[in-house]
Structure formats: structure tokens, C-alpha cells
Length: 395
Length: 226
Image 1: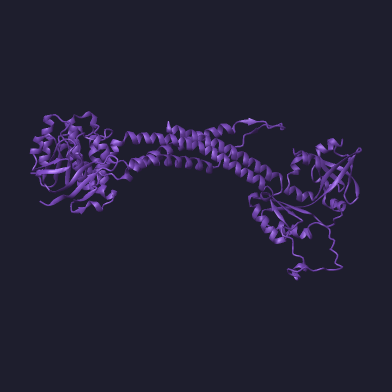
Image 2 (image 1 turned 120 degrees about the vertical axis):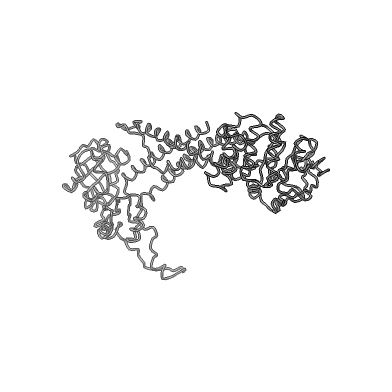
């Protein structure tokens, strides 16, 4: 019965752990797939110290007739920086110039975030091409006055593929652009509020010639993003933010969720280990006479402790083994369950994590609990005073 | 004959709240090959003295030397090692492990000591049991033996590691007269070969007379040593 507790504990530990970590991995994968792995922006993490401050250390100085230099915002010399980043192994990079604009059609206005892109490069760093429902990103190259908008935005403005719309930039420049593509990501804020134009077109509209304000990167191994971002930031000076840094809050929530999950499933094993404690305590009580005999023969306290610890290890070990098999069975059943998430037309399987590490954690914790549970009664067995028992008789 | 066991001023008191003096200021010496019987009324401290001499209990005062070693200087593991290699116990109730076969019960202390190789241990255990007339019962469990047979198994187990001293607490207390006589003769024989001492606690005057020496105890004190 005590072994059954461990078996069930390990099985449920694995089932819950695999579900939680599977959903976590699925979530992170979606996050990694849908966003740049690294974004280099036209900001500095640590703004450079002004020359006047460098010159007059710890001084209050009035500088007369000084006018701040007006400079077009964006990454200076982005083409060189782009080439420098592209030379890194396993890295794909594309320039983007993002700004706000208003799309007008049939008397309706909509504010959008306009991204100026180089279609050939953008295709390597974004999955937007996969989200196109009409046209492709390349259509922008073929038609410099083309624009790609979300299908939901098109519906709201009663627009279709091939229609013209009016785009007004904050610089006051107004252009008529032709819809050459429609996309649908499933995220309403993007589908209703984002538009893609050619980078050159965006530079003209936003009055930022030869500028990009973001370099977006995809890596062959997204989990190296943090290190690569640091390397890029050191090399070019601009702030390079990895997806991990950008999602630190979410990742910390996932971490806390994992801690809670492991605490709960470990509690099952701790409860199961009380079963082992009870069983071995009872055995020690029943075997007090035999323990006394063995001590009188010359067995040491630690020999007797070892006997009961081995019993705990055997219960824990067998329970872990059977529990692991049962847990893998449960995981297989869970992996076969299909669900249809709200708002989706397709059914998906429950995401299951099959990593060996969780098997080792479950079995290791179960074994540890079993040994810990056996330790107290084993210590009691070692402390039995043979004379107390031998005096009592009992054949 | 050389001295194998010596007790000097040995006292055993139970602590508060049930403060009782079990053994008072006992001094004695036991030589190799001696057959010593300890006699006395119930509650006189015979068994308590035997447990002290057998290193199962520790005196609150006085010292015990076993084979020339002051046992008060030994820790629990060393005391266990001394019990294992130099002492053999036989109790009134056989105190055999009922889940084990007769042979395994005898092998147990030998396996723990590991002085002999496994085949030699087995050979010795079988020989001991054959010598004690139990050759046909090697693989039986103790619950399928008579009281006398069980006590002989216990004696075989006590002899397994060739101890210096056999300590027996009422070894015939639970046996009929025929079995008692057989055990008594066996102890006499064990002591007679001069290789080991035998110390028994007994109520049986016939058993006591079979020994070389009888120690009388009253209220934890030795009142006569003849």
C-alpha cells in the first residue's frame, strides 16, 4: 500500500509536470516564433556622457549660445551595422523603420503602426509571410506604392486586395497606396493596427532618409539570444534586446508557476512518504525482538539502520520505477487528447513535455522521500536497547 | 587456564524515577574452560549481571575486562564487535529468527563477522548443527522444531564464531527434563574442552551442580562463590 502511494505520486507528478512544462514550452515557442529573437533599437541602454559633463567633472556650468544638435532619429549608419550583424554566424537580420500613420478610406480613419521593411530580408526574420491570406510580402518590391494591411483592418475600412487607400504620415506627407496583400496573425491588435510598406517608402513618409529605427534578428538557436544580444550591443552601441529580456515578466511568471506546480506535485510524494514512514515504523515495532536478537549477536546499530533504510530504498525505488511507467502511460493518454481552444477552428493536442529531466526529478524526489521517511524508524531500530526486549521474554 | 572475563566493583543502577540497584559492587573472575552457574532467587539480579558480563548493558560503576580489554573504553560499535567475536548468547526463549532457516540462523553471526570465506562458513554451520544432532533440520524454520531442538540451534548459533565465553540465561527454563539434561551435558562438554568458558544463569540446582563453580546472588550482591 505504501508503494502504491509512491507509484501514484510519481505518476501524477509526471502527468502534471509534463502538462505544465509542455504548455510552457508551447507558449515560449509561440512567443519565439512570432517575435524577433533580438531587436536592436535606436536607443542606448547607457546614454553616452555629454562632452561638457566629461570636461567639467562635478561642476555647475552655464554654457551660453549652445544649441542642441538636431538629428534625424534612427540608427545611424544602419546599413554598415546591418552588414556587421549579418556576418555573425546563425543570425538573420532585417532593418525596419516604424512610425505612426493614419489610413483613410471611404471617410473612415484608422491609426496604424507602419513598418517599412525590405521584403527579402524581412522574410528571413519574420513569419509574416506565413500569415498572408492574400498576396505575399514580395509584392511590396514589385510595387513601391504597395501596402500590406491586416484583414480585420481591411474589413473595418471596407477595403479589399487591390483597393487604394490614403496614408497620412506625421510629417504631413499624404500618399495613395495600393493594397498588395492582406495578413491575419490571429492577434487583433496587430491585425487591426499594423501595416507594412517598403522601407524606402516609409523613410520618405516619415522624413527619415537613410534611417531604420529597428534591426530585427532571428537566430538559428533562439536560446542564445541573450548572449548574442550582449555581443551586438557591445559591438554597435545601440540597445539590443533579446526576447528573454523583453519577456522577463512573462518568464518570471512561468518560473513562479513551475515552483508552485512542483511544490504541489511534490506534496503528493511527501504524503506518500508518510505511508512508508508508517509501514516501516510498524515493521520496526513488530521486529523489536529480532532487532534485539541481532544486537545481542553483535550487529551494530548502523547495520540495523541500514536494513530499514534499504527497505525504504526498495519501496521508493520500485515505486519510482512503476510510477514512472504509469506516468509515461498517463502522459501518452494526455498527449492523445484533442481540444479546440476558444476562437480557433482547428483542434490541437495537449502539449506534453517528454524531457527525461522530469522523470529523473520525479524518481529522485520519490526515492529521497522514501529514504527520508525510512530514516526515522531506521534510527529508532538502531537505538533499540536489547536488554529491554530480552528481559520481556517472548518465544 | 587464563582469565577471560573479570568484573571489578560492577554496579548497575536504574535511573530515576524507577531508581533500582540491579547489581551491587560485584567482583569476579572467570577463567577459560570454567563452567560457572549463577544462582539466586527471582529478581536477585542474576540476568542483569549476565547482561553486564555479556556487554549488552553498561555498568553505572565498576569495570569489566574481556580477554584483557577494559570494555569501559569501548564505544558501541566496539562493544558490538566484542559481542560478535568473543561472546555467544543462549537465552531461555530460543530467540531465533523465525523467518530464517535453522542453517541461516547459525550463519547469521558468521556472515556478519566474515572471518571465514562463505563456503567455509556454511561448512562450519552445517557441521555444528550435525554435531548437535540437527543435521536433518538444516533447512527447516525454527517454528517447526521442538523446544529442545530450538535451544540446540541457539547453542549452535552461540558457538558459530568460536567465542571465548558462552553466556546462557536460563537455557533450560523452558525445556522438559530430558531436553534440559541434554543441554546441561552439552554445556559441560563445551566447557570441558578448555577452549571456552560457560556462564549460565539457572534456577535448576541439578544444572548448577554440573558446573565447576556456583555463584549465589541475593539483592544484586554475590553472597557465595563456591
